[in-house]
Amino acid sequence: MAGELISGKAISKAIRGEVKEEVAKIVASGKRAPVLAVVLAGKDPASEIYVNNKKKACHKTGITSIEHILDEKISEKELITLIDKLNNDPDIDGILVQLPLPGKLHEHVVLEKISPTKDVDGFHPVNVGRLVANTPGLRPCTPAGIVEMLKRTGIELSGKKVIILGRSNIVGKPVATMLLHESCTVTICHSRTRGLKEICRRGDIIVAAIGKPKFVTKDMVKDGAVVIDVGINRTDNGLCGDADFENVKDVASYITPVPGGVGPMTIAMLMVNTLTAYKSATT
Image (cartoon, rainbow, N blue to C red; front, side, top):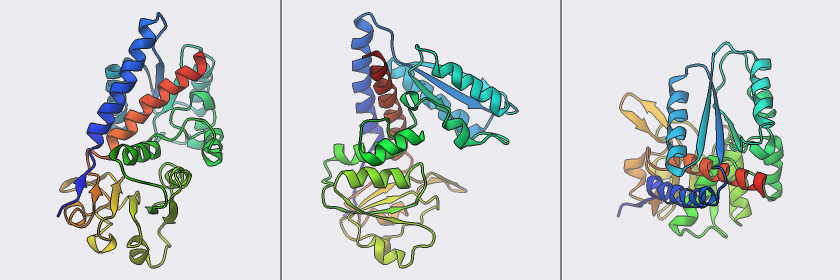
């Protein structure tokens, strides 16, 4: 029996609806709407698509979106000057610098210039520290979306064995920390992990964020496991995830599709973070 699909589209729509309702109440009370500033340097096609999707999500939820489209030859000093200006603008609640950055711009230098209270991507070291300490702060959108997706699907997390494939700062490490806070037993695997198939087969939940098309095969997944596929891989046959969906779904109890799974959750949680940043700044 095929596993049940976890629809990121449906869950994200519900979350955006909740944000829209709250923003509408804010505006009805005579206050301004939350404002998200998005900075895009260069003309990377994928980045342009992501920024456009974020703009659409803002429009649908009532959040004001302001775009700063910059030349790919912009200097690091000029970009940091813009970020400083946005940091000091009381009418800007969230700042998002679209990655990757072009040329010789250093991502860690630029991201660390964003005020932690406006860091809606949750990448600033201060917010990373708050995540590890499990204190209030802005959480990375994709990991937060994964946890929210699991909870809203009704999947019990406490005591579950979670296998995470990938140790990136964007997904692997933060989602491991979040699930640890949910009382999961977490194992992080990576390119040098030995006995990967046997480790995966012990998992009640597998989070695949390794960036390799159809890497997770049916024989790596135990019957009834939950498979969360974070991968977005462009192949000659179109988009596919890090899991071999057509075969893995036969043994999984729940599985996310690609596209339509984790992706929409990331943008939904960006809306949540922007609203959270707004409320923190205005209360």
